[in-house]
Every structure is written in C-alpha cells, then in structure tokens.
Image (tube, rainbow, N blue to C red; front, top):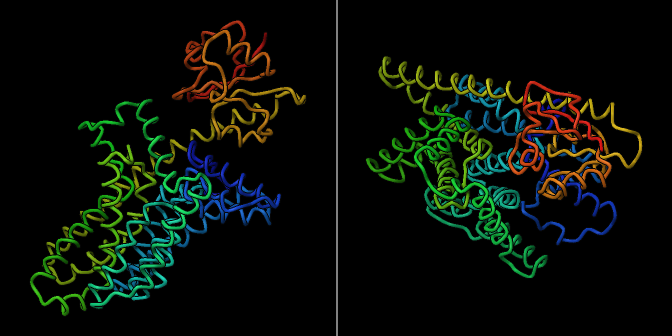
Length: 463
C-alpha cells in the first residue's frame, strides 16, 4: 500500500530512480555493458529493478514494489529469527507486529531505494548463520555488499562466528563473501581506470557536503545528540537497550562457564547479537570518522530488524527472573516501543501532509500548463515533477540555472518558463534571488496562482 499510494521521499530515492532509468534504457537498447553498473550507489538493487522494468515497464513502480516485497520479507524473517531464539509464538508475533506496523519501516519499504532490500539480504544472512549454513550466509553477505557497503562489515563475521561455534573455519564462505568488494573494485577499474574511484567519488561528495554545511565537518554536542537521537528514534530505544543487556549477559556467561558448553546453550543468541553490534559498529565508525557526516533514520532500519529478535529473547529470559524485576523490564521495554511508534506516527502524518500539498501543486501544473511543447516549469522538487505527470524535459531546476538576477530572468524567458514552483530549500536559486516571493512580495514578472499551507507556492511567470 505504501509503495502504491505514497510518492518517494524527496532526495535519494529519485537519484536511485534515475540510475534505474539509465540502466533500463541501456538494457532495452541493447547497449548495456558492465561499466553501466558504476555510479555513486552500489548497483545490485538498481540492476534488479532495471532488469524487471525492462520486461514489464513502469520502472518507478517496479522499484517501489521491489522495495515493498523486500520489506515484507524482512518482517517474515524477523518473525522466524525470533521464533528460533525464543520458541515462543507469542513473542515471535510481537516482534513481527513491531516491525510490520512500524511507520518508518513501512514508509521506506515503499520508496525506491536500497535500504530495505539490503536489510532483507542481511536478515537472510543472519538466519542462515543461525542455522549454520555458512556458504549461503556468505552468498547473501556478498549480495548485500553489492547493494550497500554496510554489508562489508559482515565479511569477517562469518569466519569469526564459525570459529566461535564450531572451532573451525572453511575457506569457501570467506572467498564468496569477498566477491562483493572485489567485483566492485573491478567494475570501478573497468569503468574509470581507477579501482578505487568509488572511494574517491564518495570522498569528494562528503567534502562538497561539508563545504555547503560546515557544521557537518565538525563535532558539536548538539549535533552529536541530534544524530544519536535519530539512531534511537529509528532503531528503537527498547531494541538498543535489549541488545546491550544481551551483550553484557552473553559476555558474562561466556566468561563464567566453559566456552564450548556455554556456546552450545546460546549459540543462536550469540549470532544475532554479534550481527547487531557489527552493523552498529560500522555505522558509528563511519560517523565518528566523518566518512558518514550524519546519521539518517533509514540507516538504522537494519539495526531495528536485527535487534527485534534479541528484544524477544531478552523478554523470554525474564521467565526465570523474580516477578517484580521481570514485570519492570517488560513495562520499560514495551513502553519504549509504544513511545517510538507514537513519535514515528506523528512524523509520518507530517510527511503525508507535505505529500498532499505537493499533490495539489502537481495537479495545478498538470491542469494548467500550456499544451505547447515549448512551455516549461521551473521546479526543484522531484516529487512534484513525478506527480505532475509532465514529461521530464518540460522541467528546469536550479542545478543548471544562472545564479544572478538578470541572467536568471533571461534564462526563464529564453526557455519559455510558464510556471515557477517556489519552495524553501537549500541551494534553490529562486529562494536566493526572490526571497520576498515567499512573503507575498510579488515581483512584476511573477503572479501567485497557487499556494499551500506549507512553504510551497506556484507563480505564473510573465515577461
């Protein structure tokens, strides 16, 4: 439902969509080569969506539905992992409900981006590792490593878990898991002549981002608090607390007992807990080394999925605790779950309200733009562009426009711009040149024709 009814979030989902469109065009045109896979994003999700849409068409809905199917799969794997850990259908259904009705998981499962498909591969690898299927776990890690670099953190985890649980290490899973970074380095070399071009591109992107927002390049107490709050907001305070309790308890148990005997009893809990902390460590390492200048909610969705079985397991272990202690922990953790969902519902309503306003603007453009091929719309909002259903060539944006007033006005005139969509956003040329438009101070060339209850307006351009 989210995939079909909600448009993409502004930003990265449309970057993924454009990459999918380009791959699809190459596949349909018969010009596709392996170098087409190289780009800012690791290519597996885009390639899968492009391949499907090359057959059935409609790349936007294909990309969103692939993500939705993967989101459903994540819910099922959370249920299965929780059931294996706890042997309790009630707790397994609780874990399933917590993710299946989690607003952030539902929303991002409807967007055309790789976070939720990647979470499916991670959860699949986790379940295989729990069952001791190391080769299949390595295959899924390799797949995840061709979708997002976070999966590279799991490459050393397979031999480490195999050694911990079986006191042996086999070579084949290690080789399979290493395929993803090796193949990506090869693709980078084939496409650019530099095997490490991907890392160079990311480094330049971060430098550009920091130059635009210098606060991202340095740590401040307020900034760190905001980012860590985002981590707890998405991965869930109850999940993080449960995983910390599990980590502490497992380390204590392994220290107090003979290693082999202790691991036999809690081997699957060790696997899930180490998966969670491997993912968390990679995220925090990237953040505190400024290889990832900020923590976004979608980065933590995989932590939420990995941690829910641990949460169920911790709740299960309380059956041997004194009743007051057990009830106190249940009350705390479930209250935190309810609080998390409450905040996310609030923010989801804000997003849906913004979407409804963008639909109004898009509908106005659809119904009022001239039928001539020359008529153009100046708009920086990708969501409005997609919802309007107007050909992509009919839109102009700040990315290619002049930044001084007279040149910008001439640019609008020469390109037969009929409407200008005004919206408060960084790097928007109309905002920088005509800030007064947002305050109803209308220049002679601009007539306000549509407005919303957000910072989004449509002006008719006349010369």
